[in-house]
Length: 387
Ligand SMILES: CC(C)(COP(=O)(O)OP(=O)(O)OC[C@H]1O[C@@H](n2cnc3c(N)ncnc32)[C@H](O)[C@@H]1OP(=O)(O)O)[C@@H](O)C(=O)NCCC(=O)NCCS
Image (cartoon, rainbow, N blue to C red; front, side, top):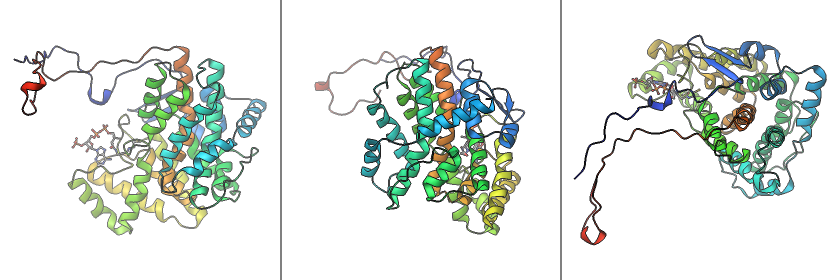
């Protein structure tokens, strides 16, 4: 005999929308007003004026660095960029066809094996790991890209910015300052975003007092999904599938008629414009003009209008970042990894905050199954017995 589950159990909102998991001083998303701040500073201000390194410093230390401290911090990150031979060896063994996000996840996980202090979760050790991970993400990605293309990985250039060094290691040529600045601004815009899915995943892992490599492995795995960081790759795939601008409206109508999600639109928190999309649209236009073709950003803008006209959905961060990256010569499978190259700073900032004031994260759930089901011994079951 079974009894129905009581309906008096507490129920969480679907997808934990609106649930607050703790206090933070790192970033804030105001979904009603369309505002994002890092440590209180408006994202537009940072996108227009700050460098990625400055933002990493701001997120981790809660201060805008002096010129001397920023130079020392940038140099410190720069000198940590080289990957040990043993990790390069692992990259050489990975099939060329592997998804770069999987490569990044596996390499972060493998890094723990070679770090004697992997388990140390003291504040000092966590900061060391934050610097190391931020410094090596571009190296992991560029090295795997070159290996998969049949080229040898290039040694990093410590004197370049994160953006310029990535473009250099990836393409084999030093980028012009405009290209480096455009990528740098995109990195600034992706660095942190409140309690997003990948940050939450990393915090759940860290809250068990597992180490930072494990927490960042969780974060990379979570960012990969198409409803989160993976959407930027979906945007360019859609634009390529559509092919010509005149086909956009019909394509959008067909997608919506089938109740299919259109990548780069909608947001769990913003009920208005995603402020990052506004900056990325400007950056995408500049990237297009620099490259001599605004085809991708023009198509994106037309798609934005079509989706608004037909479904009243706002663009999110992933819509315009796709044409920024593509126009800078980054292949689509590296779009989400480039997002990760920036978000590593936000993940680390939240982890440092979490370890300093830890509480195991252990929510409940609303059980909707039966109770009081009697166990029937195996010998008495001639078939499965549904319960
Ligand atoms: C980000 C996202 C998961 C947030 O979703 P959410 O707040 O949970 O909202 P839901 O997925 O429940 O969607 C609410 C409604 O809007 C629709 N909707 C939301 N985003 C949509 C999209 N991108 N395309 C088409 N319809 C969309 C849903 O189909 C749903 O419609 P319904 O009420 O008729 O069923 C969602 O907007 C989405 O999947 N976007 C596409 C992926 C993407 O760009 N992700 C990157 C986010 S930064």
